[in-house]
Length: 105
Image (cartoon, rainbow, N blue to C red):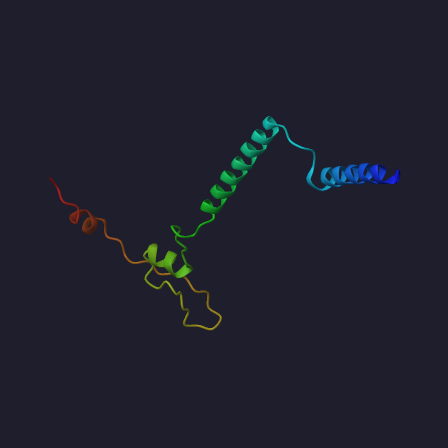
């Protein structure tokens, strides 16, 4: 009979120690607010990182696209010889023709 109160006390102490071990000490209101602010900042940082890594608005250029952008005539650079070194041929650029295309006011 006298062992029942002692058993209840030990069980209560074990429950408290287990809670502290697995979930930590009870937080005060200030500590809870600080923790919420910290988790909010961490979430904002994660969302910024995800938006930076989003490829929705980014353009991926292939080598062929870059060569066309540089106005290469033979952007695939096929060499007629098996061991030949392929060199790009650029479209001829005539400054007079280019200046004639600009309207003069």
